[in-house]
Amino acid sequence: MTRNLDAVVPQKIGAKTPKQQQTKKWGKKAGEISGAHALPGARPSMRLMAERRLPISAPPAAAVPRRYPRRSRGRCRLLLLPAFSVALLCLAYLSFSSHSSLPFHAVHPGLVADNVRKEIDKRHTLNATMKTNTSMTKNGSEPFTRRKKPRKRYAPCEIEFVPSVDNLVEPADYNNFTQFSLNYILKEQKLVGNALFGPLFGGHQSLQERDETYYAENQTLHCGFVEGPEGHPSSGFDLDETDKAYMATCRIVVSSCIFGGSDYLRRPTKSKIGSYSKKNVCFIMFLDELTLATLSSEGHVPDENGFIGLWRIVIVKNLPYKDMRRAGKVPKFLAQRLFPSALYSIWLDSKLRLHADPMLIIEYFLWRKKAEYAISMHYDRTCVWEEVLQNKRLNKYNHTAIDEQFYFYQSDGLVKFNDSAQESVLPSYVPEGSFIVRAHTPMSNLFSCLWFNEVNRFTSRDQLSFTYTYLKLRRMNTGKLFHLNMFKDCERRAVAKLFHHRTNETTDPPPTNLRLDNTSSMPG
Image (cartoon, rainbow, N blue to C red; front, top):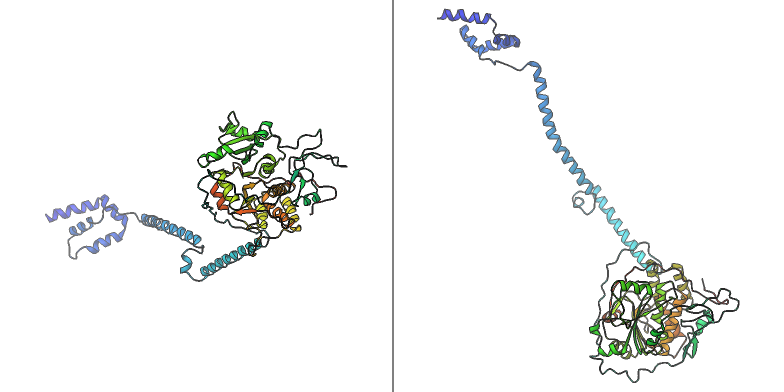
């Protein structure tokens, strides 16, 4: 058996089987390794068995340097991707952490702390600049920058009206006011040597004539509705004869106006108006034709008697001014001209809705205070200097025209409001102006004419001319008192609800109706 096995094995080895060929390709080292692992003294057949236990196939020598670099590159990619993401997050954090309010500055010293101190210094500098600008505003200069203030809330205050108007009687000693006679210039003749003469609604009034009208005495003065010579067109504010006849019968009047379609029609609250006032008080709303068409398209159409609710609609044709704000001063100040028989009148701006009985208003603001003229103080400002700056900031009117008016008033004695004075002439130098209650006394009518003449001559911003007119009238009439009740604005809010205008106000053009005689001129 042994012999046969030895004879067979060499034949297989000599034939160079594929296994032997593969072993030969690996070289002598493979054979040497096989021999080294063989047991000493073993027979050749056992050595062959050991050789057969070697791996049948082995990777070629060239494959080793290619396989392992591929694996290392894959591992590198897996490591680089999160590292790159972490780097991006760090950069983002560092960019945002430059703000001084982040906690980064509270932890890290050095350069970051320096940046924090620089930011704090900048804020202190900005606060000091704002304080300086505020003080400049108080001294009469406009600020460099102005932060928006939080919007203030203004609420009405309670008013103790009398319980009812049924037994309401005018006090016996109420009409103890200054008495004199006033007449009005109705027509002007052509001025000699003036080829550019044209009729003006306010007339041609010189500075000397203007100063003379401030004396509370029997006189004939300019007070609107001035016509030119025969053959000249109307100066404006033309009314229908039927409306004139109705207005001549009014003894107590509540009036308002809307010109240029600038507002909505706001009806008085009927539930607040008593039966006596509904029968005896005239509610007059002046409209131009454009506003009437606008309101009609919105469903507000006058009935066969010309009423929309309590309002009697009166159409005004040929407005005397292109500036709608200035045109609105005619019914506001000249109620004594429009209602010649009236004893009392209440004026409402179109942005207000009346929700109190007119008779209760007259009793509270006039009879109880023994006043002949009542107007509310401004809700925010007390000095004309502040009002001038505010009109410029909001571009309420041409700045040059405001400056000319303001310089003229200062040269004629207007001073700043001083609330620390022991006996202040007025509680405020700036009225709110949208709500006026009047008794048609001689002094009240004179003041209304003088105030209108200032608006006619200068800007239409009547808050700029109110205090000057009142102080000049008081200064030139020592011993002849004008009983003015300047009440709180919260009381105005208690009797009339405030709304916003339909259209935003724009800057008005400079006044074009200044007419002075040849011997007078406007100071620069």
